[in-house]
Image 1: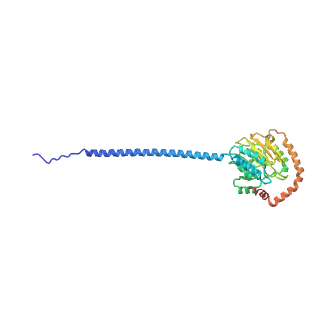
Image 2: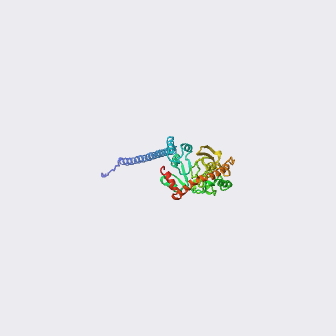
Image 3: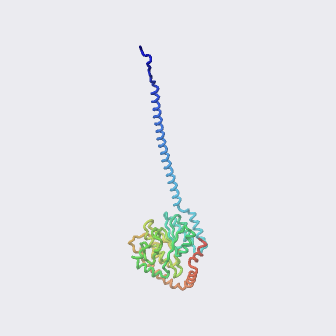
Amino acid sequence: MKNSNTKLILLHPYIQKQGSSNRLWLLTFMSLFTLAFLLTIIYTSGLYVYSTATTTATSTANTAATITATNSPMPTTVINTLLHYASKSNDTFKMSYSEIKPISDVLRKCSFPCNFLIFGLTHETLLWKALNHNGRTVFIDENRYYAAYIEEKHPEIDAYDVQYTTKTKEMTELIKVAKEQIRNECRPVQNLLFSECKLGINDLPNHVYEVDWDVILIDGPRGDWPDSPGRISPIFTSGVLARSKKGGSGKTHVFVHDFRRNVERVCGDEFLCRENLVEESETLGHYVVERMEETSFQFCRNNNNRGVTSSSSSSSSAANNSSSYSSSSKFVTSVMGVYGIGAIRGCIFKAQL
């Protein structure tokens, strides 16, 4: 007897296909997700690189434009305007247009940044600072109180004081001593910071001696009477600074104001040298002094003793004229003793600065 309860179990193939299809969809989804992720990374990286490059280029362009604008010379119209109004001032001690113009022309042609050293705080102080646009401008003055006053009122002015030990009436003896020590303390090429030469200025800040000065103007200290300090030291110091340059241009333009006076002419012949005098007027001498080797022990190539002769004559002239100076000298000395030179100079320049 056959068993009629036998049951057959059939597995439908749809179940296997359904599982396989799910795995396939999952694999496809993961592949697409991975591809999208990679594309996103690549696209983002490209944007970052492009953005960085654009920012860098823009920043470089802006910096270059700023530097160009900063280094650009002052417009000629502005310079001429400054010269005009400075020379038309009512100040008794001002420079004339014919005196200011040669200095301005040299500053205009000076390579950037121009290093400008001035002996004397005068009516033209702010003018020199403005004309040497974006350059280094340093002032040296005999009166520390007046230098401090100017720096306080005009913080952009860089001024230092120096104590002069020379006197105008001692010029002949001082030149003689300098010649005797020309191979030692008073040699033409040296760092004056370590010098004991009586004519050299050695008490300024260290960096003043390290700068390669392109232009030097000597318009101080006072030199109107025998006991005044005179400009012997500034002229000697300028000659040494010009010959001792380490870098920059090999030439230094040195201007000497009040060139009609004996001290300025004689010391100019001795330490800046007649062969270097390229232009002169009654009130302004313009020298171009070249750099020298350390082994050089002679200020002038054409050493014809012209300065010695002039020195002797000017010394006797000063002696003969000392009586004419005596009354005014006594008056000025008495006023300075009571009020101080700072008060006098403050009254002279306060209205203009």
